[in-house]
Length: 200
Length: 200
Image 1: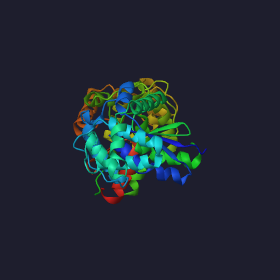
Image 2 (image 1 turned 180 degrees about the vertical axis):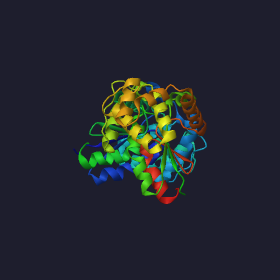
Image 3 (image 1 turned 90 degrees about the vertical axis):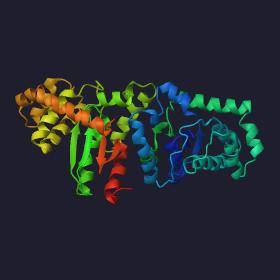
């Protein structure tokens, strides 16, 4: 029972962001590593018939409260971005490209992208802003700029999204431990109990 | 900060059931009482555009796993009923009628209805089964049988559902503490933190 944990997320997901601040530490307590997989929710939403929650009457208003309160509960800085949600295709491609070369560096980039979006209200859909975030993490701005328009990188991301959907990923975050799926930051205690007990 | 906690639920809601097994004990730790409000989700779903989750592709399969795992996590017996979901109008009317007379007895009835449905796979939509559950709790079978078809009881329930929707209830369970809404059994730790800290 010591396989890697898979962590699927979309960079526009508040709960994906909150999970990203905690999942590695929880996994490390139980000697597990986490493989991060930046994906795109839009095609997964289409498969399951899910609609973005803030667009829903009543429920959308609730989640504006819940996003911020959940962040406070988990001790994570949070501000609802002025553009929400937004396209995260470029961000996911940048992550994919870096992750293929250096997963630790890719996690560092992912933290920076999430925090730029959910703390500093940076429009991470804008290429220039995204490249600025990457450069601030010591990545080569021009190299990333080329990568996010490269056909191979596009195909690598598409393949990841297709595989995620085939596996049953329908939301963000989704975490798989020993093949068991957990959806949502609120399932982090379940993930931890699973890790501590070997399944329950 | 000592007002009553409002607990809204539908008798066909697995997470409403899990919450019902814990909310009074959590509230009591902080000197709070809980007012239970059996409602009907169908009209609330219509307002927010929500669809029953088990009918959704992919997401429905996940929740079959998650319902049972969440019950195990919370130490509550659970079996997915063979008819799920089902109409809970009669059960909610029975609860409403008893609750108007004896809230403590009504909670006892609610526990019995929830457990009959989610542990013993009893079809609580059937009047005869419902009256059997009530009778087993020491309630007068004929009195309850009359009450669930009484126009005043129907109106009392309809008024409760309308008021819940007007307040913003869109799912089950929903708990209000000091006016703050919390949706889902997974928000029970947030409820407890709120009670412990006076809001966060």
